[in-house]
Image: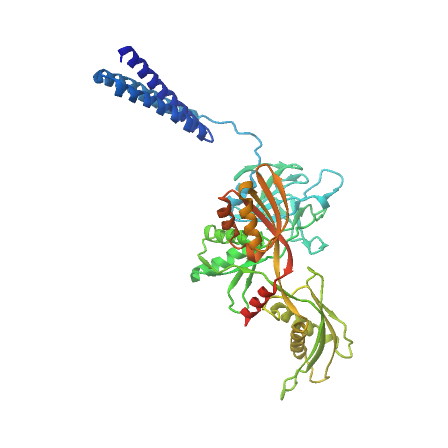
Length: 525
């Protein structure tokens, strides 16, 4: 190997190493780093090193080659240090920030302490009238953080900071009414850039910003000008379908747990907190397994509550499938008054989703009006406990059709207990059954794994409604019982090697199979 050839290859190898290292550094200094370019430039640098190694192996003049390597190594190290210095200086230079950055609601959510959604923000309209807001959906987030209450929102009218007053208006059920919780001033108005705030004096209609301070609102509230009250359409929130029991690990966690659950319930209308009637344990309910996992993670991460979580419990319901009728008498023997009560009740199924309804069809001569609320209370308690498997009953109508009373010995307590007993007998005779929540499911799976995904769904009692082909994937639409979906996320990842995704939402309550009904009824016994 001639000296000229060795030197030529050595120069080329050293230059290649230098260029590769330079490109890798520049790619790392980019914001965000261009990882593909970093890897490519590192490969170039390694190619130069391999060229130098080949020279070393093939060369017979080891001393001369060592001198050559030392020279180019010094050049490489010096150039490398110079590039690092230049990159550091470039990073220290001020950068121009765009005047308007798109707000990142997800970033704001996950970096905040908590959030509440309201349906609209109307303040000091610049137009002559509001039109079409019944079809407008506005999302506003309220953050309860260390800096107080922060209300995020898209404005439908102009808002000014300072002493401007706003009014809370709420949707109560189906009747829309304005409920003033007291006028509150807009203390501070900010424009949000992800989790960074920029104070502004005014936000125009269509702007996205936030209010810092003021009174806390609730989900479904509308903030409006007190002189022009207006309420936007509220949100439709379904009933929770999955629950777990939760208990604090220590006494110190108990107070924090109650406070955290209260704040989460204000933030999320689909999250419910209750108590188990048998054990007295705290129960939380939500719209699915992932929903509850996120809430429990927030309890531990944000509120520092160490809590133990029980097994998932599906929100089953009971109903009746035919008409029934029963009467019951109550009397306390030897007591004065005897707390006499006598009622006759008739039950019949209602349409799916209509819930429970109580009607009074008895004459006042049989059951005086003063005793009817006591009968309704006793029936409501029995409806809440069920007659078959201990689940609350729904989709039925209970009618008080007759009874009798005593002028002296009858009492509300007697009619309440008689109503409870009569309902249990009537519902038991009306062929009760159990309902389970059914979810509307959409699965996106690659073509190569569609068979395994479909087979797993059919094993979970799913009813496939259709399949839609898209480039590289199949979209499966199905309805499936929620009880069969516990742990489905893990099973789907396993069957598709992590390439399939799914989403689901509550659809309806449907009757369970007879085997499931008998198993749930036997568990109560």
